[in-house]
Figure 1 (cartoon, helix red, strand yellow):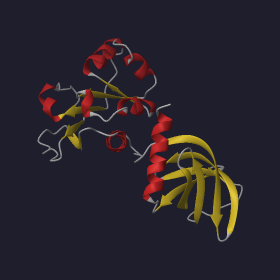
Figure 2 (cartoon, rainbow, N blue to C red; figure 1 turned 135 degrees about the vertical axis):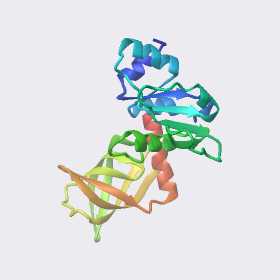
Figure 3 (tube, rainbow, N blue to C red; figure 1 turned 45 degrees about the horizontal axis):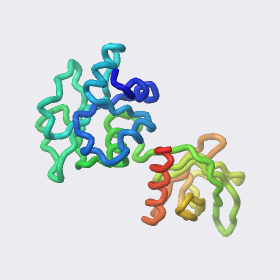
Figure 4 (cartoon, rainbow, N blue to C red; figure 1 turned 120 degrees about the horizontal axis):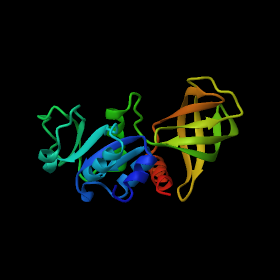
Length: 219
């Protein structure tokens, strides 16, 4: 097997086969998706892996539109995500389930891969954290901890009880970005913690969270 393919597969749960040149992806996209549980293998890497484990099957093929004619016909059709220009694709090939403009960025590609391959898709990556935070509600303020974070929400451990559906303000600090302030709603419990969904996050804070997620995944 080519160098790196075995390690990528061992640390991932789902395989994506890429029929696209490196420049069709934004920098570090392949490395970050591997850390999120998706190994992007070249066709020759996948073939070498399949020779060792015949039951291995890709969940998706990512194909540059200029290479669609080179994609093999699988015994059981594998969905295709096309990397294309701004005009998109026509969907003439029944295997095509979506398209994204080149170069494919990590966040956009992750969202589409989740939609195609997961029963309960997540729109944005979530990473574990341990960030000191402050909750503010009805004039009261108390310390809490952000245990995991995504662009759209977080899991928080709060010493104060909160009813589901409650609205509050949450503040926490990110390296190099400073204090992030978001309006949030308690959406679910993951005992003993609470899941918050962010609402109307300012662009500056949303971009700071996205940068923090990317930087953390690249470590």
